Amino acid sequence: MFSFGDIIAQALTLILNWDQNLSNIVALSLRVTLSAVLLSCLIGLPLGALVGAFRFPGRGTLTVLLNALMGLPPVVVGLFVYLMLSASGPLAPLQLLYTPAAMIIAQTILVTPIVAALTKQVVEDLHGEYAEQFASLGLRAHQRVSALLWDARYSLMTVALAGFGRAVAEVGAVLIVGGNINHVTRVMTTTIALETSKGNLQLALALGIVLLAIAVVVNALVMALRASAVRAAYA
Image 1 (cartoon, helix red, strand yellow):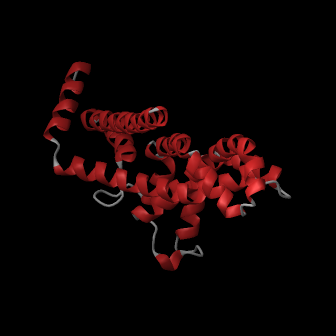
Image 2 (image 1 turned 90 degrees about the vertical axis):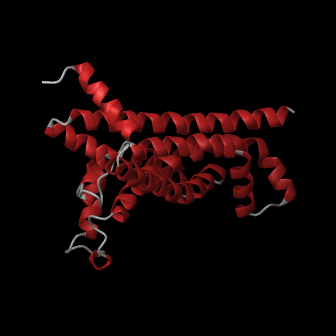
Image 3 (image 1 turned 180 degrees about the vertical axis):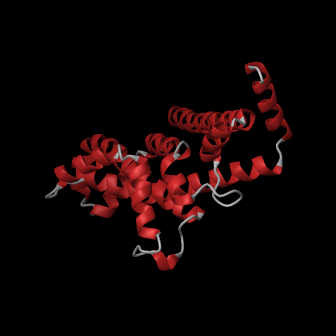
């Protein structure tokens, strides 16, 4: 029976040795997560900006829906995507079940409402400052959205960061649609769950440390970009 100190020491040794298996798991996790966040931003940023900048019938309902979907249960999303991609589902011919693509789809569904709802709030506050100026310039809808997104770009980095945090920590949905297949769909979170259940706490802890390190690095990069932008603005 290993002591707590032994487990930590062995976990750090695994990280320092950085074998091929560990590298593959981390690389796949980042590929799936970053792909999902990118797709979520491509969908959620314009959607949130439109809802935040314009008044239209059903806007209130859409806002409530986006806020509600921020709390989507991952296992429900995983089950929905599984049913869509399974042999009896409408998307069965695509043969995406138990592939990284299925995991990206599930994570995108989970992250997009978060990105859209947070973007809506950021853009809505900003639009109040520019509404009269936009009206005087006679800008079209897409021009307003583009201008607002560009002006709020540093605040929207935080929005993307929230989406990244949601995606990188996901277990339930990716486990259902990915199957946790070794060397195919096994990512950091599902490996941590599996190895913990097997009693292989050294590998689970090593991946946990790597996961936390990635989160810290991404946060630090976003903060550095925002800080450099502030310095440039006052230079």
